[in-house]
Length: 113
Image (tube, rainbow, N blue to C red; front, side, top):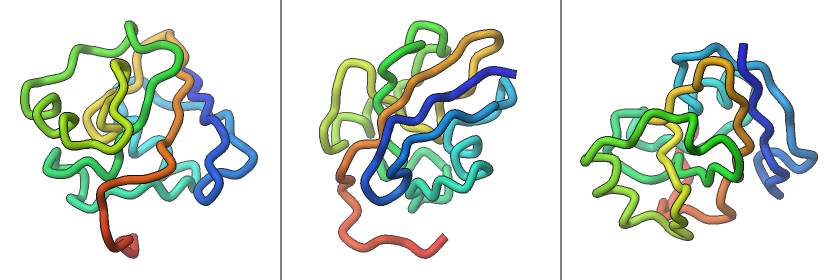
């Protein structure tokens, strides 16, 4: 198992979190399984940017992003060089991640998931 450290987010995870995650699972699914209700308006189909995260540590352990993800990330609020869509980034084998969920997304209305 790999570990994901989630930095504090005012609404979704005020205290931050440390969770065990199965390698090969999407970061989005790992967060949702841990009760961290990250937005995923497109139902994890790589069609929006609401699940955008910034990988603060462990970015190089992730498989490279695909062109579709890169095109969408250009539209994400708060884009950084280590930004990824959590629905597309897979938990790496034997590597830990530290992620930050941005304060905002481009979603104008929150979805009820």
